[in-house]
Length: 325
Image 1: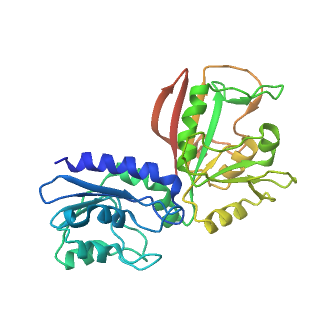
Image 2 (image 1 turned 90 degrees about the horizontal axis):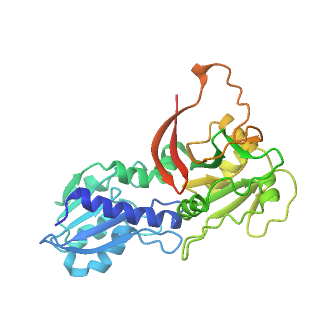
């Protein structure tokens, strides 16, 4: 049988693939191993397709082979009735003898599944996984902070420009970087741009991946535009954007816009992550990716934590998390 770390790695792949299909709910993944430690079935929750939770899908596929076996799940099984019944009751009825989960459920409505299973005689083990916490971070962020996780994507020259002085910006980064971005687009619930960027670039904001989920596409700004397939928030009030994202149950939103819009989000303290593609080019002038944020001293600088760095073609991709003071 695989180790817990190996099983968690498999679950992370499932949760990652499911993330673009989840609104309101977390992108939970689950796997079942029989009494002899052999893999039986797996499942992941995809709210846009079905209300069925990951555990229920895995149990349905496993059937009687689940009896006496073990369930590994990315999030503590739920203990409440919502669109479906409690996963705890289905697990108890299945004859599963052991449940291993990676992340405690912070949702006060659904938490308590581990205790309920333990009280029913099921062996319950909490074995933390930073990898699975990361893959479910959008939903965890929304539950803990009351709004989606917001990632800003930026393609820039080495001197921090997103366009030349004549306004040209296609293409600063390589085709490899643009293709790499498609995976992220497929894993978020919404992609947001400004009316300025929309009118300048006419972006589709659709992931160029066969079978990928279609994110909610949003254009924000006061000027009237015709944007078929997009939701237009005709306002510059950032609070209206957050209210709309929450009403749609968005867990993770991606920003693809210019410096004015990004700077407004920075001032509102609403950027949580930065994904920067650095192209090996220098302009010396042109449009910067961020504008004056009113920071006048080094002690007030926005601090970032580097999550990963990799080379994509000739570009360098760096993923940062904003460190909240």
